Image 1 (spheres, rainbow, N blue to C red):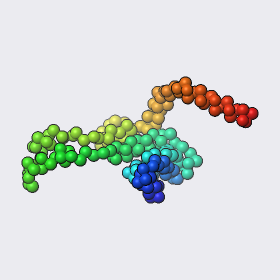
Image 2: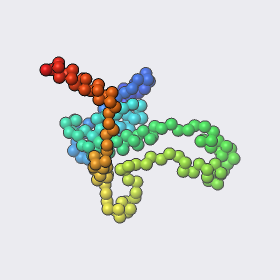
Image 3: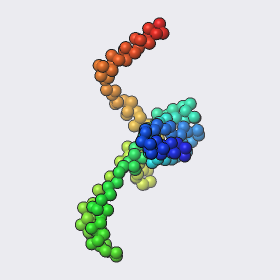
Image 4: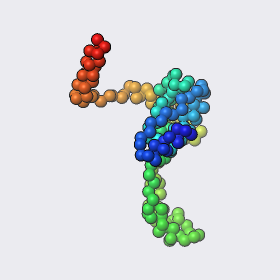
Length: 183
């Protein structure tokens, strides 16, 4: 709650906030995910501009890259929830409400048909919304398995873009100066 208060103060004063998420202290994966999910959602909704220390365990003495992938998905979901919602006459269906009246039917209104399923939806990369029977038929691949597969894919396919020449020169100058100072 203190971290959420800090995020809200930072937002109020229009300054960025970098806040650490909970570092899991237990060994049970389902409890860790609940701790992270609750903390991340709270911090995102409180207005934190950066949430860090994702995937850490045992008071940050260990790190799980697979848990970091799960935390990334939780962050994506949190960021989706705080997107601006359109608030105008068309989005609020003001004319459709007038046409339908107090006991009317909105289902057959042209506005309903035009806007049906137009809302933005969160499309998860590793969370799975299928029902139990379809999950079972699909091989019972669980969240940890999907996160681990994504982690492996990232490691196999990710390419770091090269640094700009000016940045490489600056790094070389810093290293050279430190070599001389330590030398």
